[in-house]
Length: 113
Ligand code: TYC
Image 1 (cartoon, protein in one colour):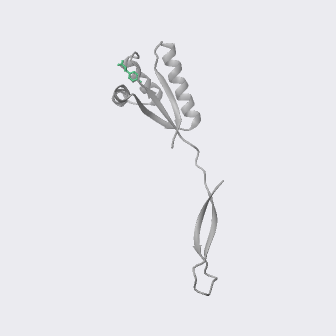
Image 2 (cartoon, rainbow, N blue to C red):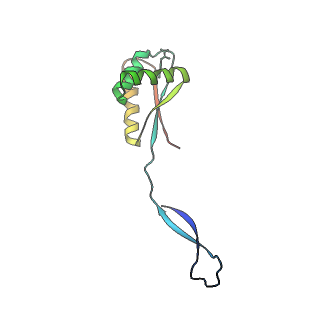
Image 3 (cartoon, rainbow, N blue to C red):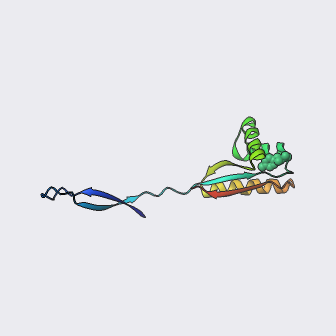
């Protein structure tokens, strides 16, 4: 558990001075999120990448085409942000699908922040 230190004035002090107290407040931990990244290469057909984005990331054809072009032009793009388990599954699904079709398409995950 992490704690947040808060500076407070002590009102029990009748001298009218500002005494600084430190309080600890339990901070709720949010589960970490993971970015799933798709990487460009020179060989995977554009239409295959579009199909991957539709099939595994629930994108429409138009959304998938747009993101595919971002990857093609910029080298990579974040295609979704998920829990560790979901991100791992999506990466495995993409890598397996690409391998079975003998395309060198690469998909990875990285912790957010
Ligand atoms: N650069 C590929 C081509 O010109 C297309 C491509 C796009 C490949 C996105 C991978 O993640 C990728 N055929």
